[in-house]
Length: 361
Image (tube, rainbow, N blue to C red):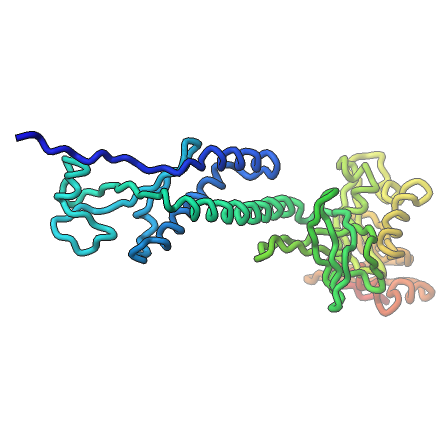
């Protein structure tokens, strides 16, 4: 008796691999989206498309569909379990049929059945196109998110693009030729500052959040670190670590106090930040729409620090209150209103700068 012939396990292919890989390699060069990332997205989408397009309308589990995509082409297999009694033809194969394909098959084994995808070619091409487009969008969003996440707490130059009726201002902070909008909420705008499309402004990146339509970048003009970053730009000694900004207290649009310290002998930290003829501090003031800035010397001695923080008022004495982070300050009669400031602003900012409650007499 002649031996029984077994069925040759030939895998039908659709010859679209070379074109897809060429397109993906070009995409990687232009957009920086890895080929491997897109291949995995394509394989997943093609498997899902096949599962939903089956003639028996069975949505078989994803693990039972295997897609091979390479430069040689596209092929697909359906994984079935070998049984001696069929209950589910979509996921099971009888032992006799299995041995016709694989002679040493045993009950409980899994066997891969080649899927005839010649008729699936059109659907595969459409699916591939959709996945590539969607993958590009998602990858670009991810790249933008990572790019701006690394710039959190940094100062960026942006162009005002539009004004929302709610009062929010949208600013393009993308590189030349790129559009990436950040939102400057009403509460993060300097009071009284007006914006118009095309204006160039410096904004501080507060946070970057993932959103449906891409990353949501929130920026600020009122954060104390706006002052810090502006002085870092204007003062090389701060960038080089020769002068240190110890603390900032700010009421945006009105007044800020900044405490600085020299990191080495022979440097005047206040004079350094003020700059020749006041050029450095004036550049910061101009950027902040005329906001007044007091630069004082930080000191380890709380009494001396409070005395400096109350500048421009002259102080007679500072006495710490035992057991409390508070102090009593004596000033000359003619300096009282200056020490307190308009609506208490000078004393309030000094207290926030030093961390001490200040009682002025």
